[in-house]
Amino acid sequence: MTTILICTVGGSHQPIVTAINEQQPDHVIFICTGQDPATGRQGSSSQITGTGNCLKAQPNDEAPSLPNIPAQANLSEAQFTLITTLSDNLDQIYLDCSQAIDNALIQFPEAKIIADYTGGTKSMSAGLVMAVMEYQAIALQLITGSRSDLIKVNDGSQYAAVANSERIRFERLIAPYRQAWTRYAYSEAEAGLKKVVAPSHTELRGHYSKFRDLSLAFAEWDNFNHHTALTLLQRYAPSLPDDIKAYLSIALRLNDQNNDKREAAQLLDLYRNAQRRAAQGRYDDAISRVYRLIEWTAQWILKTQCHIYTADVKETDIPEGLTLTKHHESGHYQAGLFAAWQLVRHKTKGAAAQFIEAQENNLRNHIKVRNLSILAHGFEPVKASDWQPIQNWLEEQFVPMLLAETASVRIKELPKQLPAAYTL
Image 1 (tube, rainbow, N blue to C red):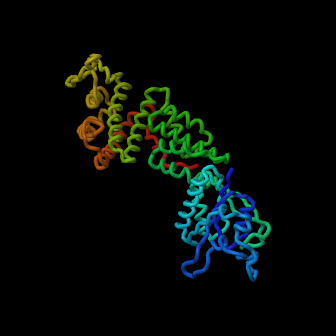
Image 2 (image 1 turned 45 degrees about the vertical axis):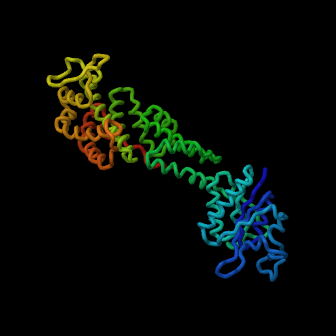
Image 3 (image 1 turned 30 degrees about the horizontal axis):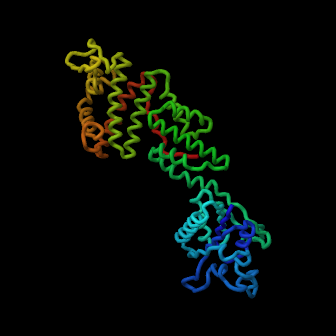
């Protein structure tokens, strides 16, 4: 396999020569500084292009006694490339190093690329490392050895050491998918993580698998696939972070064998789902979910308390003054949202009946916003200014009523909103 070595070059030639001798690369890319614009002094590029004896064997030697680095490493002109950059401009160094890497990948697509950041200024080393972090397959190394002080390693003890950067690369790679969680974009996170090559490090691979599967779990949850979400959460139950463990009990409730309790939990989950759509700025989606929540709440109450099903209301259950339409095929009397709430008013005596008695006009006004939505019967998108009054009304009036009703199945508080952050 072809090997490409990228080196930052500074004031000392020894570590560069060591790196070349140990790796025996087919081609070397030297990242150097050119002539200083302020002082006019030669930069480190002279160590590559200098003629004759241009390098000192020891810093304190009176005169140069060694040829340039390519000559010491027996490199022909075709075996190296010189890239000049600025000594302390981190932005420019990063760009120059990135360009050098891109060019190497184009010129040597199947090559093994190693980047050595030992030489050069601190900014040059930092710029090369930052650039390399963007490429998962590039190895990072430095020349080290025994030390008598903090200035340099002892001559003759130098050797190339692999820089352990897998955790840094991993964190950088998954950062966009952590960010996706802040927007409840779990599907985006899971899709992105599928494209990330799993780390070789055992612990990091475990973190990767957990992050990917939990992203999938909450993506499925967000899509109302509560059974799949529960299965995935249970897989990691012993090792779940504390802030995630709380969702296990919520997921269990959403999959409860008791139909009435499960539906009650699903109603509250639908409310949280609507809030997530609003948090994403998807107000039409949010209000569509609210419409379904209001309709479903009436259906659940009628079914559990009165054994009335709005898709097939018995004629004997229709109170005087309420007109229901018959389905043209089945012939069953059916109750839409407002008719269902009138049945709640007449057939029940709890919090829901009191709610519709007091809030019917407000309910109708809020539903008008939904009806004008593109996702209903209108042509106007729902705006944030349309959503906020509805959200306030839900929090102050609708949700307290719903919780009073779900208390009958021992659900007395809203579930936690799905997580907006992930911690490994």
